Length: 336
Figure 1: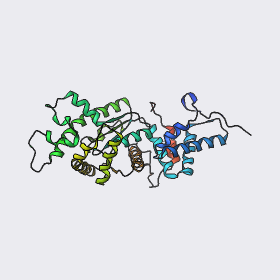
Figure 2: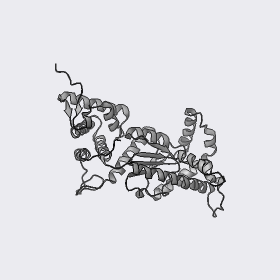
Figure 3: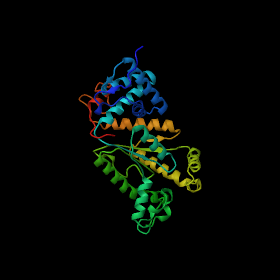
Figure 4: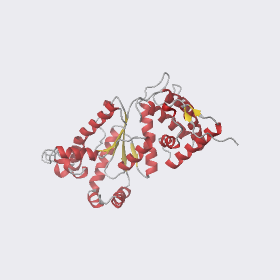
């Protein structure tokens, strides 16, 4: 009986590194596939490699094999998503993801899980930006920074226009201030060619133009929880998991939080910013990943005769094999 080779080397990888199930599973998770299923697919890829009896494989061959196994194990949709992510991942531009939404909709949880799936190491909440700015500006100088986004109405000092809602005015003032810091972090990510996820209630559609960051793929989205009872339950669950964040304060201002969500959703609809409705973590995460990859693909200049979406001029979808060829022929100048 022939023994399987101990290592299968990726021949055109720097230093000829061996095939890794863990790294392959991480790449596959960018399709939205759950970790356990992604690792199972990575194991099947390794099994196919051993069955071939080869001791080495090129990156292009490995990507095509991964696509074929994905089709067999989980379906064409995941194979296409894998191919698209390979294209995005090889382009020499950072990916900046902006996750907005009202307090308590699950932005932090989605951001953390998304970072793990996409291999992004830099996640910054806008509350951290606000905290830094609070240390720089006194309450007398910038009062709305010194409270929660849903409780800034009582710190608005200037006279309000007739029929203006103080909750929304206070929220807008705080978000506008924090946006200054968020924009600076985005510029730094572009300068350093580093992927970044920003998440927080201060990422309001229309407060900055993602198109100004031409050196990056910028994907903005809003997460919302439509059911008030489900939204309220998030605060109770968070209080149980994190003792430092009791639910009472959030529930006392729940009407303000819901009002801010309605306002943010209205701005998102006006500016065609996608709204992802949060019902379960797995479903929400899958929607976000699909959205991120699709939006990033739209930002890639089309090849001759193709549209940015990856569809040729004849209207038929580009196959995953062609996308994988583009991915493996492109070059990243930095290690993600």
